[in-house]
Image 1 (cartoon, rainbow over the protein chains, first blue to last red):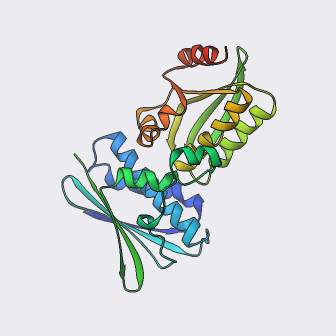
Image 2: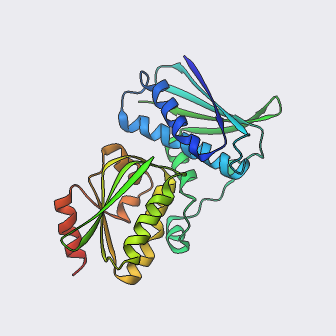
Image 3: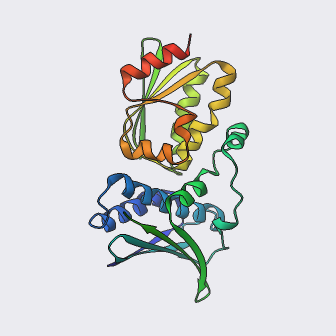
Length: 137
Length: 116
């Protein structure tokens, strides 16, 4: 099975992203906690891109694809044509620094890396493709 | 998307968070906590019983008050979280940095112990 969703880069649209993922994966992911983790990771990825690569311009779009190639494995692709925002190159601030600096951010990337098994960036047809893989036990 | 109700009970402020907190709505949480603090509350209980979802933007709001609360001797206890929400706090180890109780009764007990 595969599913696709197109999103305008407004933070107001994150709720729609979450609802889409929940609906698409309902039959594939049994655990409510795991499903919430997956939704969280994708929410973080989309909000990062909206803010950092597209400056919340609602005329810019992200494409989200979900593919369930086999039982126990879900592959997500987020495709956009903004400036590449590669979380693998992002320095992770440590938790103590976050408290000290009172920064309301920087936690999202840590969440994505903890939740997803693999995050890979490639280009296709001149666009950025971020592929995230989650194995479900 | 998120609605926050504030009530006072036994000398504590209770902020009941209803709905979902993400990057577009975390400001509501921030404003509610700031209002409690601004009006002199030193005991803040956050009722998470109807909190369906929280992303890093919401976690960041709670984190951002840790130091200020320590300096001003203000205490905050979160309670009543659903498993999926508790899990979000646990992934980053934030459950150890914040005070989290199972229910309101335990939250009140904990905040009174912290306030001594």
